[in-house]
Length: 321
Image (cartoon, rainbow, N blue to C red; front, top):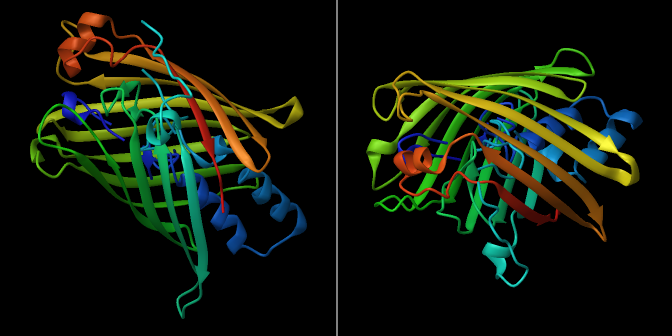
């Protein structure tokens, strides 16, 4: 999940992936797999089964507004003063925000059980921390995660990107440790590297951490090599709640701080999103609205165009196998 190409950067994957920034797309899988690795009680099984029916519970807040998510941090599926138009007429990668298919398996070894999960998806617009990473176009994304029963995990995630330069793909590599403190309280700590083949100047890394309790998550991601030498801190708070009729609600608010003045005389901006999810006929449908505090001129100075940070409506459909 990334903005690096624009002079800043990207949920997921290890952040939600939102416990960490990029885990937005597969962090939920890690948490679900960790629960399955424990003694399988009936209530725990039902909880995992329910989680896997909600795309927001599997995303973050980064990417799950991660990313990458992710939310990192997630999040939800997208963020970025005009409403972008999405139409069902757009084909596959453009019409679907996150149509994903996943595979998971537990492997036993002398040092304990390992959960291996793979995922692939389509998105109408790859948005990270409120800014489009694909110039408003669709993306194909996928990842691989390996998690030990003690909470240690490692993984990789990839997506096509378009910043108008030589970089056409983003690869994320992450390592982290997450676990439950109580049945309703958990934490996640880790490191993630964003790599852009063809434009190494965009590469950067982050240290991330989050604490979740009763649906509320507070997290942050810190980098000391953004744009080569800039220091950044992305902090966020997110909340997930089950509405009547099995509709899921996901809210997130974040702040992206830069050491150097990046937006005229300002050195930070805010992003926020609200999403709804519902499972019908075996498919998970999602609708997410997101926006940022950046003006058109600030966005143009940061990413090269004034509408890549605008309010965005994201429609999604996903299927878990």
